[in-house]
Image 1: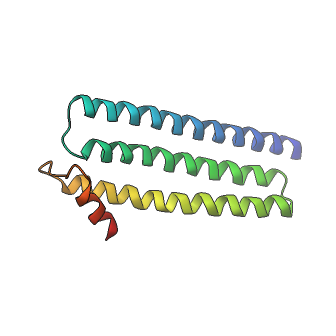
Image 2: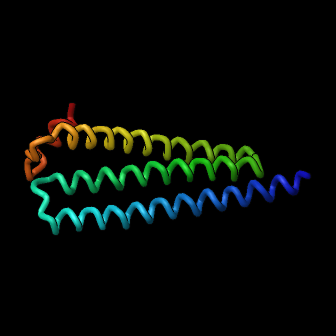
Image 3: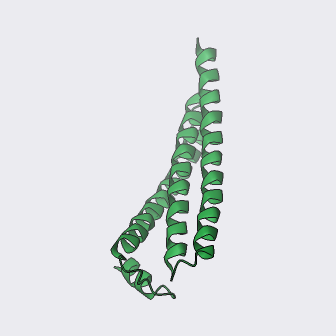
Length: 133
């Protein structure tokens, strides 16, 4: 029974890692497509870059969440103190990255939603002022 549970945990870890990779890669491809489409349509100002960063941020955040889950599953298979210590460091780093990524996503989302007239300045002055708040 223990071997069966270990096998399931290993497969679940593998699936979570594959899902994270697929989410991140598809997010990168979609972001590149979205950015290129906006540039071809000549979306004014800094807006296309902000929207692209927002899309990529969502994908990276979700991918990081899957990687955290995979790390937890991996450590549940062979919980040595060394593995638990490494897991703690990995989760702490990924959680901090996810926190700041989510914060930037929220900031970019509010800048884009507040920009109803397409008035985002080309050099990103308004964006940097909003992000600094």
